[in-house]
Length: 65
Image (tube, rainbow, N blue to C red; front, side):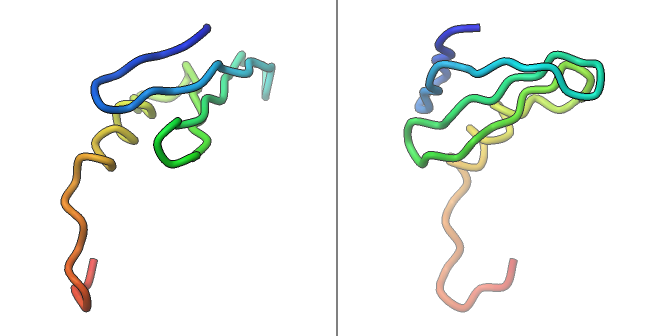
């Protein structure tokens, strides 16, 4: 895994390691600095979920989540 480029969000170079018998990776969002765990055992598209988070409208002041 090297660099991942997704629409509007670029991720830095990945760091791959073994955890609990599986090979996982961590990438850093170049927009906000968040660390994203990529685990092939999960059914969640973590980079896609993070990209959607960036695309979501910001809550208004005083708005409850």
